Image (cartoon, rainbow, N blue to C red; front, side, top):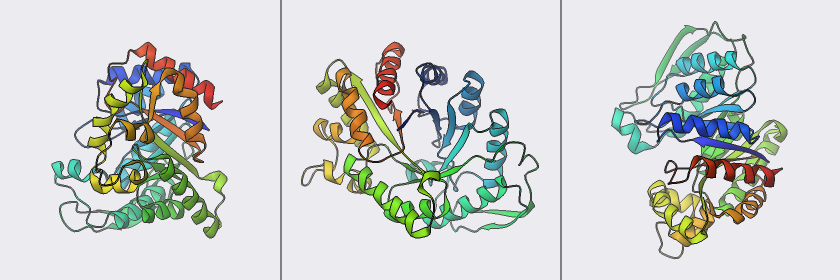
Length: 322
């Protein structure tokens, strides 16, 4: 199982870049730079990580059809790939609606918008001349092409493009139209296991080779000397991440009857959380779900964890993952 770390873009950039450097030092496979409206762009951190590392893959997670033109996104991705051929990957999503609303953007039909975004982004990256686009009602507005061609395409291998998904139809779209599938933080082990199986089933039906399709999952991290303290620290963060409609999909089997938000006990079933000595067990639990890559993310910044302790956690996870 591959092991990577996510820079959530919610803390100081220098601290997140230090975490990326630690990830390379301990031999992780990748660093994902997240993009959320109102927080950090994924592009600048990704460029900085590429300039500070030699081996880790670097991904941009979160470019969305409501906030980005696929032609511009392709320009940025191609430039990054030229800096580090073969080390760049993207994971497109449809964004958090509440955050998108702050810039007047929405997607009345998120699956349709995601399909069009994948189609046009991959077309731009493949050195084709692109016409047409996508019309979207409301404030999002969609985008248009009139003979656009990315002149830098071909200077380096085109980065793979994954899709962030939660619900079954978006998972099916990833298997149909993307190079991989990204699964959200806050998911239970049961959700991950069943979703991996569903994705593999779609690939088999479509005749796609599963070896060329990466399923990776983000896991919120809270690890420290005391297991209970780590779970209690993470519970309110997960509650903010998982509003009831989302919790009903990602976390249904981890919540008790009538429970809408995770408590400390549920946090242990929805995250990479526990004591230092729990790290090998947690790695094995995620490996058993069938995912190809586990991406560890300190959702609430450093959560009081010193950089040396975070590096220790990453090193222990690396050793356990093999």
